[in-house]
Image (tube, one colour):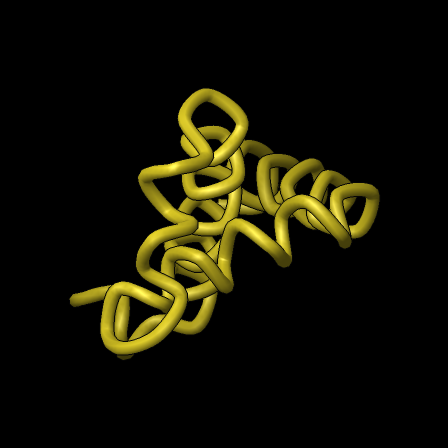
Length: 72
């Protein structure tokens, strides 16, 4: 089953995308800052979410890790 049809897998992919984009922007901000619009603007938006909402994203990552490790 792909991640699109499984809700927990979809949330995991979204959280990983947000965390990865925020990490890449912390290392090399010019890579994501030059693509603020268009299809590649999704990565810039994910990086902004990861930076601004980092406590919430961190809690979601911990809850998702707990559910993957102990609930399945």
